[in-house]
Image (cartoon, rainbow, N blue to C red; front, side, top):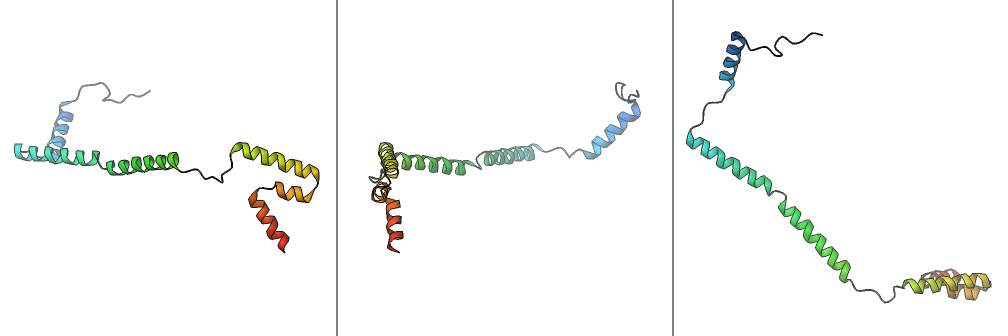
Length: 124
């Protein structure tokens, strides 16, 4: 297995000189203290602005969620909404009407919506 020649060997003088030349050519000029202070201030302002970029959307989502919970929690219950116990009685009456084989009992045992549909169909 071949190993790289520069894996654990110290850098030669020629390689070190090449690294210095490339580093000097690519390094930005040193900042003056005034320019450095302005750069730091601008960077801090940008970071603070990015930190709070989604805050209005988050506040709107939390407010909408709280409003939805309040509407659901305090929505008035309709009086014509049958309770679970009423549904059980209606289902029992419906099954008895089907077993009795009387069409009058059968239609009377239907829920109000189905009775209205049955009346419309009988009118034709």
